[in-house]
Image: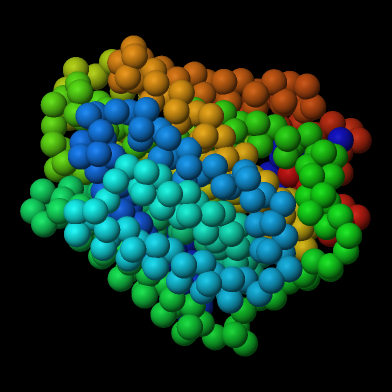
Length: 447
């Protein structure tokens, strides 16, 4: 039976936190990506703000419905998104999805600038964005391995998260300033223009330098193979359940931060933007810490979920916006530790020909639960209060940590030792488990 142990990789050609940037293709991809990510976070901030303050009277439930529509397609389109990532040319697929999202942002911006926007229209655009992103996300996650290859994949995944969260640090604060000065609609239009950066980077990539792995064959039941892969892997099932709990009930930051900002701390758009950016400081720190590690470790996944829950407990108790912001930094560090570790573990332990389908399932589980979690969190914030809603996030982190610990207790032996005087949890493989890093019959490393 496979266990959650650290996958062993061939030695990387370089060392250091930013080693993936030594390759031309990854540098170009990262440069275009950070510009587009800033625009994406500006739009997310503006979308939540217009729903909460302009199209409703501070309705957290309405924000939750928009989030549900935006992330629900990850689950709804699951039979097609992973298949597309494994069978289609990922570079061309990304060009198509990024172009579609740019056009959607342009249309929403024009509606808002002209004063014609209504809540139902924001709901429709959120759903269309979600449908496009459902195809974009698994292709983008698996495309990273084509940019850097297997050995530097964990580093590249972590640097992608770093870029995403640097943008998360910049985008909301800039959006808050622009909303207060020129209006929400212009934020949507600026985001539409930001997609030109990532489209340009995709056009400039050197095709000869891409690492093309073994691709999937067009066989009947190809999509179901992804589920069969997970069905035979208790370790992947544990990771998926942990991601489901955190993603469904914990990663509802627009609701948590906006309701605390408006109702508890009585702030405006700038305050909301600054709080969202403050959490991104922790997210960047967590992503950089992940980038320094040469291999992902399952004990970081368990520790990250526990810290995630504790961070929410701290946030719920904070008396003012500044201390609340400090708690958000802790949550940001934990959230990035969980997501980057989980994505790296899953990709490195999956046959390259199956990665698109497996990653689509991972993303559907972690984000597709939003239609359940976001309206629930919004309802609790409306009825019981924003602080009580934060308790749901705390429970999700603690529950996910317990899932990881119970898996290890059931499938692996545990022992503690003290290298260099520091306690560290290590995993003792059961006798029947092959050494970590060995290949199974499908050519994938076991976790």
